[in-house]
Image 1 (cartoon, helix red, strand yellow):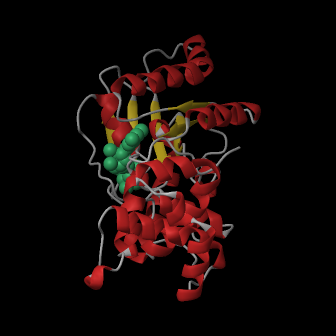
Image 2 (image 1 turned 180 degrees about the horizontal axis):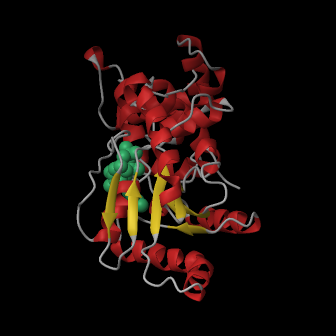
Length: 300
Ligand SMILES: Nc1nc2c(ncn2[C@@H]2O[C@H](COP(=O)(O)OP(=O)(O)OP(=O)(O)O)[C@@H](O)[C@H]2O)c(=O)[nH]1
Ligand SMILES: [Mg+2]
């Protein structure tokens, strides 16, 4: 299944960002630390090419610590200033405040040399839907000024917020782009909840998630749902393969996991059949909210 979502309001939002470019000193681009590649919209990467840019790897609290460090290193190698952050944490948000001062230092010194003093710094906060832009702004501000919510498309228009120290932040709606480069991008964006779930086959997505978790987080998955080796044995995979037609043979090995989750969590249909659809939704929700533990889907 192909995952794709590009409603009209995103084209409008993109236009608004371009129109407001001349007003800002820097762009703070939020990406999700669990998928730092797929979470970077190429159109946002090219927005304001000559502007100072800071990449925030947000929701770092949900991602694997070691992988976080590896990503930080990878961005450094590319010469892109980046910052690992948990936007919900006010103390964490302060790290961004310091990072903004740091990247703005040179421009500020030049202004002072030209006699310009006290001009407020303006930053545009951009990123894919649901990545935490409004949450970050609220943490920096210390008030719930911008609307937030755990679904994509919460922010509808632009909103300027001025912090007590004069820093001005422009909140923008999350944007995706018209055509993803490959299947992985859309799938990963759907996994972290940047795409409208109404357009998504949750069972397929959840199976794909299991496939991607197995190489690194098999034990984590097993212990979280008390899955026994018998429940996911080769015989079990064979039995399910024969009894079910799934569109993608890659997900056969993932199927017994959804069966086991349904069984162990008592998610049953009539006739005591494991309800794999409910198990799929539960797994996805647990992953998105960090209840499986710290997980990184993409590695450098
Ligand atoms: N664990 C964790 N959750 C976060 C973090 N940042 C934001 N969230 C949560 O992610 C969800 C989305 O946050 P928003 O701030 O509304 O995201 P947004 O980027 O403004 O989304 P749109 O306006 O829809 O584009 C909310 O449930 C937040 O509480 C973070 O650093 N860590
Ligand atoms: Mg928002």
